[in-house]
Image (cartoon, rainbow, N blue to C red; front, side, top):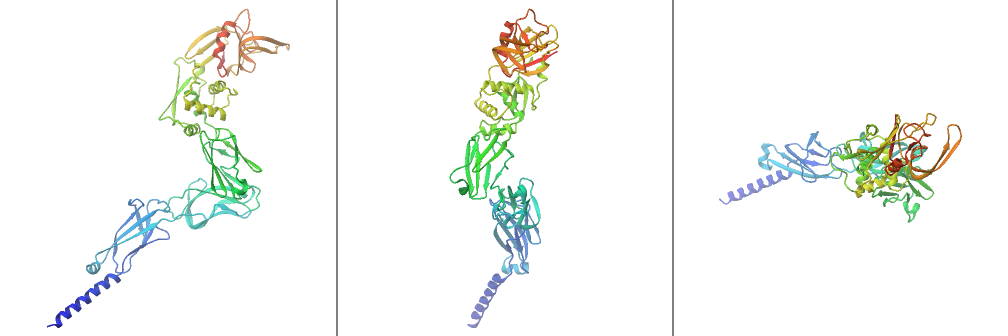
Length: 514
C-alpha cells in the first residue's frame, strides 16, 4: 500500500520536470536588429506563427510598417537616432499550446542608425575627386541644397561631385545623409576642403564674391585652427554690422547678424590677416520699397496688407524687404490727375517711386540721387517701426504747352493753383515727359548759352526748382505769359512762383505735356 503514493509522487515530479523542460527548451520567436530594415523577425520550427506586430515611436505612437522576408520596414520616414519599440505576439501550435502556452510575446528596443561624418575638414589630393566619409554606410544624401538622392548601393564614401583642381582646390558645401532609405535626412553639416599647398586658406558660406541675405549667418572655415590664424582677434566686418561671432569648431567661425542685419543692397567685407573677403548683400524688392513709401506717406497711394502685417521687429522688417507680403494699393485721393495715374506701376520701378525716394532722402538729409541704397532702406525700416509718417502731403505739377500755356499745382487731391507760364522756344524746347525736382533753391544765378551762341548770366532768379538738366520752374520778369519764350525752363510770374515753390521740394514730379 505504501508503494503507490511514492510511485504517484515520482510520476508527478517527472511530469513537472518534463513540462519545465518543454517550457525552457521549446523554440521561441525572436526579434532583433536589421542591417537594412528596422528589425527582423525569426520563427524557428514548431515555434508557431506571428499573430500581431506593433511598432511604436519615441512617444508611444503606433507607426505603420510592412513585413518583407521577415524584415520590418517602416512606411513613414523616421528620424535618425530615435528609440523605437517593436513587439511581436506569436501564437504557438494548438497541440503544444496547452503545455507551453498558446501565446508568446517578445519586445525589443531599436535605435535608428545615425549617419555620422568622420571629418568635416577634408584634404583631398590635387586633381582628385572630393569625397566625404561616414562612420557607416549611408543610403541617401543631399549635397548642397538640391533634393536628396538615393544611392544605388549603401556606401560609407560619398563623392561631392567636385574635382580638386583650379578654383576648386578649396571649397565648402553642406551634406545631409540618412543611413537607411526609410530615415529622414540628418541636419545639413558644413564640409570644407583644402588641397595641401593651396593658396586660399579660408573658405566661406555663402561663397565670397556671391550674394548674402541680410539675415543669413556668415561662416568662415580656415585651413588651420582659428587660434593660429587670428589669435585672440575676430574678423572685422566693414561696414560695422550688429551681431555676434561664434566658434563652431577649432577651424570654423560663424557670424549671426542681428537687428536689420547686413545692409540691404550693400557691400559687406570681412577683413582677415592678409586678405579681405567681399559679398554683395541682397537688395530689398521694389514692391516692398513702394509698400513702405506708401505707408509712410511719400506716395499718392496707400497700401494695406492682405493678411497680418509683418511683426514690429527689425528681423521681420528685413525679411519682408526681401520677400514682400501680399497686399493692395489704392489711390489716396479721389481726383488724381490721369497723367499721374498712368505713371504708377506697382512692383515696377517708375518715376513716381523715384520721386518718392528722393523726397524721403531729402527729408532725412541724404544725397538725393533717387537710389534706394542700404542707408535709405535702413531709414525706411526705422521709420516704419517707429510709425514716423510724413505730414507734408503729396504735390504734383503739370504744365500744358498748348497756347495759352499754363502750370497747375495739384496737392492732396485738388488743384490749388493755376497760373500762365512760358516754356521753351522752338530752338530750345522744354523736354516733354515727367521728371522729379532734383534741386530746390529760393534764389540763384542761372547761366548758359543762347541759341545764337552768346552766353547769358542772370543772377537773382527766385523760386527755382530744377527738374531736368538745366530746365527749372522759376520766376522771371516778362511782359506776358502763356507762350514759348524761355530757353527750356518753365517761367512763372513772381507771385505765382512764390506760391508754387514751397510745394515743390526735391522729389516732386513735374510733367510737361502738350
